[in-house]
Amino acid sequence: MLSDKEIAIYALGKTEGVHSIAETLGKGLNDEKYIESWNKTMKMLGIEMPLKELEKIYNEFAKKMEEIVDVEKTKSKEVLKSDSN
Image (cartoon, rainbow, N blue to C red; front, side, top):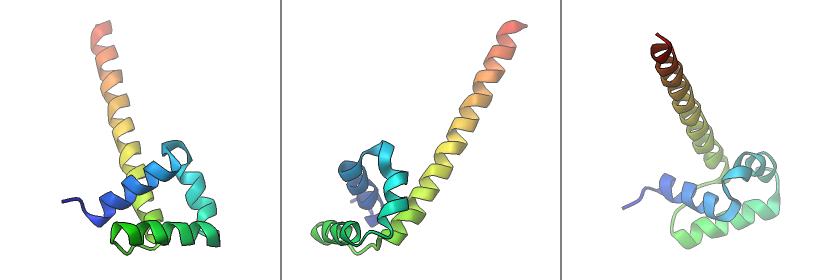
């Protein structure tokens, strides 16, 4: 069974698309219609999660993605370095 957090991330991705999540959070947190729409979506899914909580989730996700990218860059540099020797 998916957690409320996983459902919220999926719902956001399906309604907004990956590329506009950060922009949406920046604007949507103060937009009454967006907040109302978000609350209706969460209610239909049977969970209670304020939009403000989603901002925390997104920030955690973004941080993890940055860490993954940093690790991959390090790995790539190590491979290039070992190939040049």
